[in-house]
Image (cartoon, rainbow, N blue to C red):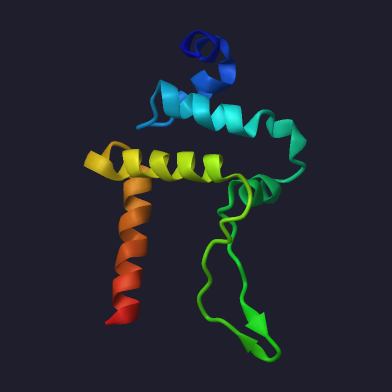
Length: 111
């Protein structure tokens, strides 16, 4: 698997993201297969199961929304692990900054 993954340019491109290693990059690329199958980025987001779900019934619309978690469970899990690797030890500063911003917003909402 390592030999095949190292020969794919997509794996090298994904490994360019700070915090991602060989196996995680290979898992992401293997699950997506071809980005060209998605006409819009929103389709890939939905395939990964990280699109926001809007909960409504009649005149009620929820003020907060959660991700739908539909789509590829393997890709969803691989992306979750990628974010965890980026946050841990502040390896990826952009992911860490975004995480900290969302965490602060969440804490102020509940206090």
